[in-house]
Image (cartoon, rainbow, N blue to C red; front, top):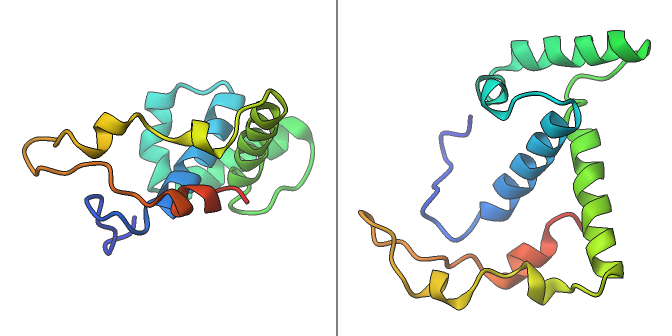
Length: 122
């Protein structure tokens, strides 16, 4: 948990997004229910236990924080596949209406800079 994180700010979103994409790709790869994985997300002890369970299944030692590694690998592989299929950074953008239509009740719009998106998984 990051008490300084502001979900309404355009800055700092790429780090949070990259972490969450990696985390949920790992959870998906492990075949876990996404809803069961949400409480684990903010609790170090269950994350350690999940890593220990994966290590036991694989018969190897795994470092603490291991879950980010396979998840990141999945997302990087997906992005590489997309690039080979002809999709570029422009395809990583949301439709224009997200930058115009406000979200109630705060009136936020999508205002994360494109270059922040381009830094993800690089």
